Image (cartoon, rainbow, N blue to C red; front, side, top):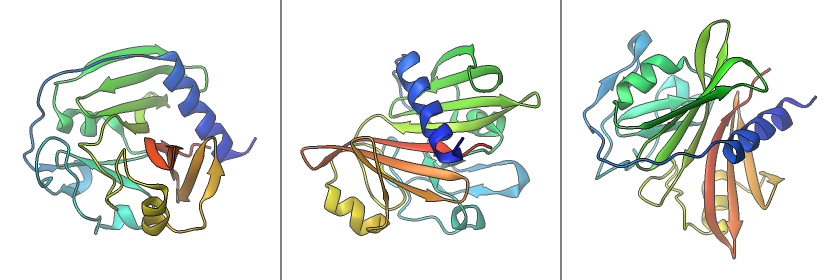
Length: 191
């Protein structure tokens, strides 16, 4: 089975099968993740993004930054969830695609999903919930399709009602309605 198709299918199944809500503010202080990776402070208010990624992790995969915490697909989830703080709604369910549990952490402006492999949790997906957060390239819910193509290129792959781009073991997908972005999801490509 195609790896990209499996990843997109996993994210879609998880999105439709799990619902959660959240409220409250997040901490915006910088954090140091395991392995010495430093997450830069986010500019602006709740969930504002850095204008770009400059570290080695960003060169080979899409990395989303939320409140100063870098979230890379397929990265160990424990340190990332801990760095994001405890102001989230949590849900878990037995996984259909992996061993153990699929876990969902819903924050004010994002949803972080993890999967279990070999007894450890890894980042499976990040969904942007509103226009207060943006990708490193400055795309947010409400951006135009032309802005997405200018930021990510014309070579994206047509997806379900949108376009998707692959970089390393990650996929970012944009759903459009009337030429505007209505959904943004980062997804891990898992073998």
